[in-house]
Length: 167
Image (tube, rainbow, N blue to C red; front, side):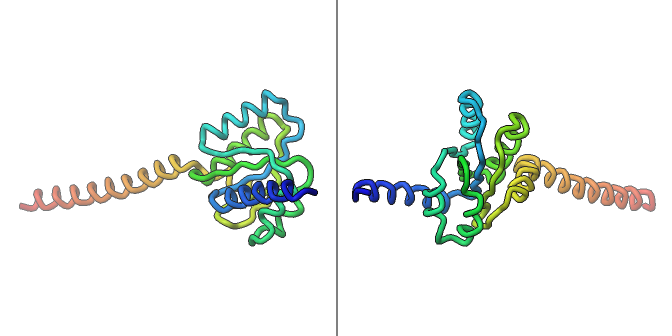
């Protein structure tokens, strides 16, 4: 192997390592069987949610994550074709899109993932995908807060009416 080739691979590995470090969530999938049209549609779904999606060589991924807390656990998943979804903003988006697309096409299989520096097996990625979106969680929180506030207002109003009736 030439020095030029080795240097170019080091640059690629460093780039992958940087993406793993920057991403809040990373999901690895086996994309075997996807048609070009299906792969393009999947890429578009990821792009809409700010998720970077790339097909990467297993050996390059292994080198990039070897010194991480999850590198050893990830080794077993690095067999067969591997595509990686890097989520930088929405922690749930890469897992949710991969799971939904896998259900739709029956061709995309979860391998593993990393969320906030912790290794997730395929079941962990599935569990992450099952979490409600940020918007749904905010709506639930606001609903709970409004319920408490309106209950408080009813109590204060009842006390006001009671005192008004006494005087």
